[in-house]
Image 1 (cartoon, rainbow over the protein chains, first blue to last red):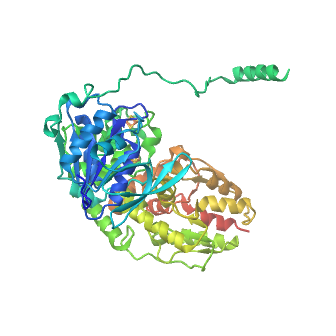
Image 2: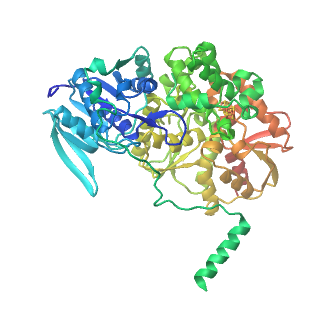
Image 3: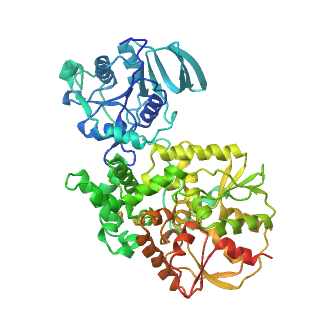
Length: 250
Length: 360
Ligand code: SF4
Ligand code: SF4
């Protein structure tokens, strides 16, 4: 895996629920940037997209093939369902070992559903690679050293790191690229490759709920910071405003 | 075949027919396949394996002006042009786009414009702060509109330049093949040329160009250094600032809002304010402002002139019902299209030529 000369790159992507409440899934925004960065910095190597997702996400991966990825792999197995970030990073790491070697592994810095941001560093740890999180942009150098700008809470940090490496990209850091007609023609014959737990040689007890130390005990909507808005007709508005003024001024 | 979002719009259409009576193409041809809902239904059936995306279906996807009237009217929030554009991309990928469409693509690839002609150039001053982006339709087919506008700028004392090699904005190619990388590349080259001119204001004559510059370029991560303003809005400013003085023409006219100005740019007031300033009483058509019925685009006219003749006639029917004798528009494409079917009792005029008549 730790092949410093590898020119291929891999992008881990997640398809998240639509945020407008409509059915179906969409590509996580930070993962859009990760794919855009991988395509932008592609030189001679190939770009593979990898997702652990239900079978229904195959269409989404096909779309990424049309957007310039050379290969798409779907990790799909009922044993994977319910995996937390620990189990997910283990499954992804195993797939990457089988599919590699890769010079760079791109991820979005966090998914808009779970918001943990844990998978990229956990993945790097399991692969034994350096990790740069919150990447804004980067400049790969011919000596195998990657120069990155990463977002901190109160500024921007400039880092140099050795490759291979795992990078987590900030949302919108690289603009997404539309496919060209020739990309689309090339993608026409491409298929999404499927891998399950058996193909990866993963023990079912190491993935899914069984392999996840995290337990979500309860989830509830948060109410702090929400404004209470009431719609009023004109008469009630005038009456209420007059009352409020009286309370404040008198 | 379609992106997930476009497929969702096609699949989720309730086929309620509410957009059917607003489609300028469907209304004129009377073909069910020309209605927006039918296009959605066909693509949805394709996805479900009950129909195949063949040359016939592809042709139907091109029988649309991408005028957004259906989007504007869809109470459930669906956007037929989203999947129609992507279906056009697919038709190109599958090599099943109609031959006249492929011919227009070839024209664009050879010359940068839909006509496949060398684009005329216009007089230009060096290093002016204002740049007039003429656009291919005004340059090649309606130069009188561009020239009238330039004379108005002269009268207002505005020093302007034009580009000798004006690159396309991406508007035409985007409508022809969908928003692929090739279209974004056109946009990027245009931004580069506008930036290189050093202008701080770019006046855009054709609302199709202005719409792509304002709406799509930012989505593609492109932004020109200069402020981009429509020709009509710029002129309205000049009149308000007193740089252009108009006398009353004391006439009645009807005004045609073109679809991009109306529904993408939502620019309704500046042309009406200019007409009022020139003493033109307005007799509005039944479908105006955001509901305006498209008369046909120059792109569609280049590959399906029989249908665009019908759509132009459809708009003239609306105009005739206003009893006005004059139909005014700011859109070079509407000038080209409506100019094909002017009825006996009416006159077609672009706003700038009309304002020239009103200049003191
Ligand atoms: S696009 Fe909207 S208005 Fe048209 S048929 Fe579908 S749901 Fe109805
Ligand atoms: S965009 Fe215009 S022409 Fe096309 S289907 Fe909708 S209403 Fe009809």
